[in-house]
Image (tube, rainbow, N blue to C red; front, side, top):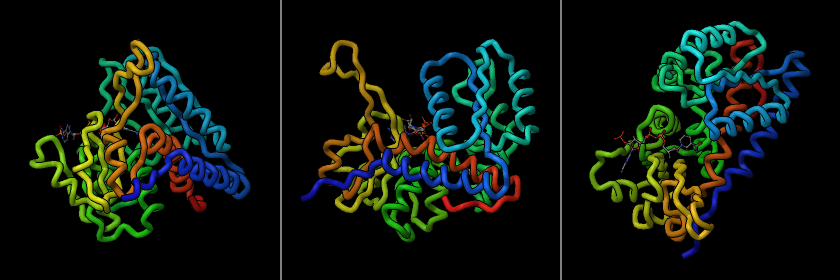
Length: 298
Ligand code: NDP
């Protein structure tokens, strides 16, 4: 039995970024304007700082304008809401992203819901969640949309595939299930109360693991026809790398599952690299919709 095909998210993200760069250039020439993405960071969480730096770097590399707003963790909720309002009213800002998590004294949903849904490039606003659920033209959360783009690239048509999504969060599991339903898959949403999860997963043509439990999905949870998309990012001890060292693993026991499944995304290097590229794609889409521009091919 041959090993699973490895779906390389880095290569895929690179191709998407080059399409975004071309789309940005077309927009500049046609409309004499440049799409802009504003990222708001509150506090000094080191992981969030790295994400925000990468987002800014990739935004400018693709030819778009990056606006960074760094606020101390002492900022009040009303000051943060004032900034969101300013960005909502700023014509040069097409996408607004507030980096999560926020400090405890700030209600994240109040902040996310203050973003103009037309500029909500994370797709977390209740209007976009509702549009996605009811089949409207939504801005869709980046991670599940990245998974869908990889699946469409792999399969072409997804119609009639059995998809199992493990996890039902608002940012990954639910929008993932809605996207797969839109593509005419037969979708099962599994979660912590699902009975006999391994056998539910074994029936899948497409298995999405979005749980947050290191290497939970084992070899006997998949069949030879399963394409596995591992969304999980878990940090586990790696004593083989030295004392106190850690390494990243997904929700799937990669080394054993790859011996059986049809295809699989690795962690790191699978879904993760797609997320920022899709954020930039959403920014172009938001700009075109709001400003009435033709959307170039992405
Ligand atoms: P949440 O914690 O919000 O949701 C986890 C889901 O998994 C819940 O629906 C929960 O079920 C379910 N679950 C928990 N334990 C089990 C179990 N033993 N069996 C079956 N289901 C279980 O996580 P997120 O959706 O935010 O994230 C999931 C993972 O994806 C995390 O590792 C996160 O780091 C990663 N992630 C990666 C991103 C990327 O860019 N690659 C982006 C976003 C997230 P219940 O609802 O019943 O509690």
